[in-house]
Length: 166
Image (tube, rainbow, N blue to C red; front, side):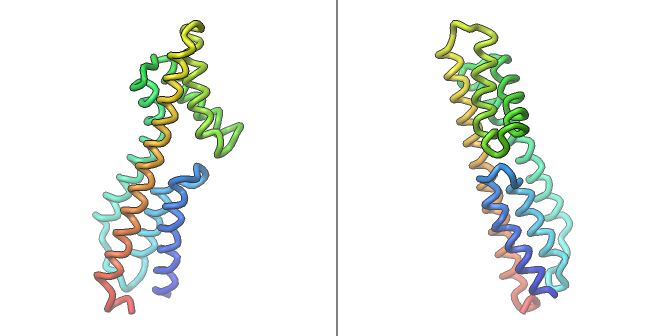
């Protein structure tokens, strides 16, 4: 049974890396579930502090994934209208366009939000929308790094307990 749990946990970690790029799957959370499954085996000693810290990291990355596009909008000269538009665009994009909406929604929302504030400033609106897209890319990168880190932890835990696992 331990071997089955170890394999399933590893598959969850791999799925977490894939989920960093697919908006349908929450990458770090999926990889964290792989770590959690690993600790359900009898071969690996329980480490609830490690699981708590990694869960906290997963939650932080999940929150940042929704905030970073709005922060990117602001960083590229967007106003509060663009930031709010980016956030609303993300929600509407997910609801109506599915996974593609996570990319298009914040971009379109920031652009429309800036145009609502000042319809004559299309270049600034476009710049804010690009900032939102760069924020999306930054969020994806953060999710990828955390998911890869979790799979590295997973492999290290297996190697440290090799004798008890096999």
